[in-house]
Image (cartoon, rainbow, N blue to C red):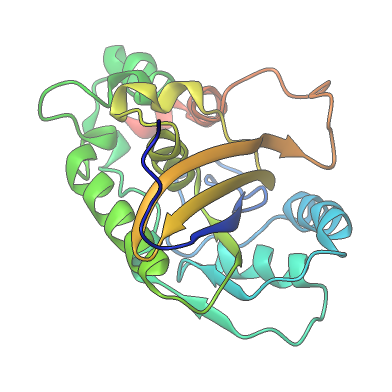
Length: 239
């Protein structure tokens, strides 16, 4: 027989969303500062479409990173509801290095296949932040949320790599699984977490990478990082 936990089991639900579309390069192909880029008009429309899906849902807490694109997405999802919003710097996207420092012949492997490389020894995202340090940062912040008792339904709007870390955690996988959890702009994931007091007993992914604006993914065929790679002009980058 399975031993029953000493405390009652509490099931909590996390509505985990990636921010809507942004432009990471200007019209001339110059990389923009990813800390400050806002949602594009397309990104706003994507978030509004998901907001319609989530309109009937009550959220006890609403959390996002402190980057503009996650807060803008969260505001669209709340649709004018009077809801306190918490911004957490620990949920920022993984920090990339300088693209111009990646040799031209390495761009495809290190950009388009960035997630496939995450579990290599001493791996770093685009020669920037260490994957292991990033994983610890994200899971540490999420653990703090789990330890706080005042919620059952959490709306968490973050970033592509942040979501992948949390989804890999939910299924008991590590960095080697990140490439499998594609996260399209303004996508929704729903994760149920069973807890006995502060102890996590199990997690269940109920919804994965749902895009309200294109549920059948008819216009989405490239991965997120393939799209980033396609936006890079190597001639300008290495001029």
